[in-house]
Image (cartoon, rainbow, N blue to C red):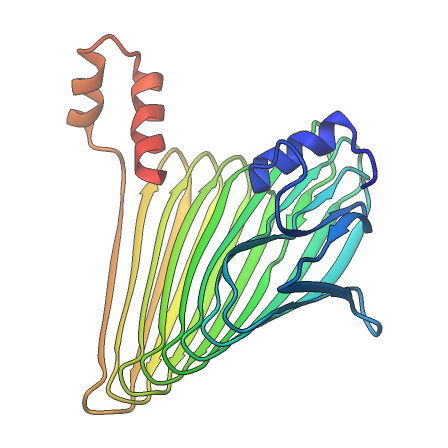
Length: 308
């Protein structure tokens, strides 16, 4: 593995909780090049030949294994588009950890657009963790535009944890999913914006098979002059169940737009959307201040608990 500097190591810790080379399969991408890769007996990682990106093949029946594919960028002005395809075999049960960290100390914008496609086999289970993080004192922006496509076969289960808490100036996250019979999708998005940051999250989940279900929940905080948009649509084409929820805290001059979308094309499609946007309750702050916290410290405690 290529030796990483301290900034790159810090970014890896932020987006993938890595303090050292992970166990199992991994590919670490640094400034548009592979900094290290390892396949295992059941998980094969190979480079694409037509575009920049990877193919990750997980053998049927693979259990209790993980794949780490984090990206770090420290060169100002670097822009890239990466295509990663995951082929998860039947009855597999794996954890996939992705994420991107950008440290921009220059004047040019740095951008990473990651397109991830998941082909999840029958009765397979996947937990997918994607964290985004930005740092650096340059005037150039830190831009992340993830695109995620999920194709789930019968009886499969996918749990997705999408996290963006700090430092990303502009992001447009687009997630689409198609679920066969008895497939299950759970999405938990956690997001905080500040300054003049902008974050757009768009989800379109299509429930095509009987017994398919989806639960898409976003929790977010918009501070300063930032803007957020949460656009979630669930399409029920069979006897299925779907739920979307946007729960947001708005502060300062922040703006939040929640756009619900439910489309029922079957009489037995049960679809629900919930949305709540509001400021931090004054009594919560007062209660914490009686315990010795300042108002600012009380706000931070509430936000940290809300986004946990």
